[in-house]
Length: 155
Image (cartoon, rainbow, N blue to C red; front, side, top):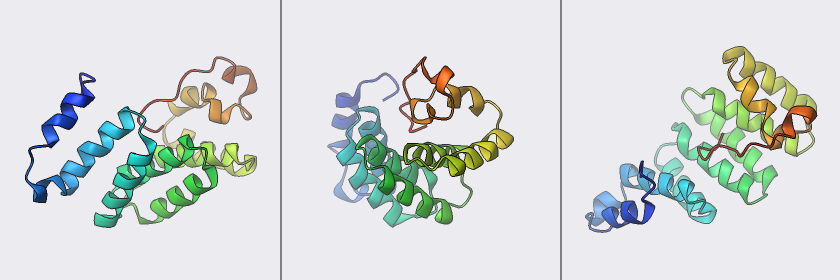
């Protein structure tokens, strides 16, 4: 996966015993491959399965919401991640950052700003990320013209 050889990574999963292939570890690897390949429908299925196994894990919630966002189902993305945020053991800055993006895309600008203030207070480095994020262009119009692509990790 680290080499970008996703077909090969998928092929490595084929000979796994069925019990292990359905394990959270194997599903997690499949989720990361699907995210890297922008296979959003597959991400939805895998993330939901992983959440069903352990709702306290952050990564499946972030991936699930991000896939919905990429499918332009922003309200569902926001609702999904809000649900996840309540269940995740210790939500990272990425959770609130993505929620700020969804709020901005939905025109909830006060909510987006409030979330970003919290994000920036927790980790100042996110300010530069936010300035270049097209999802937040309404909040940073002059900086968003640079339009850098969003990271594949769902940020």
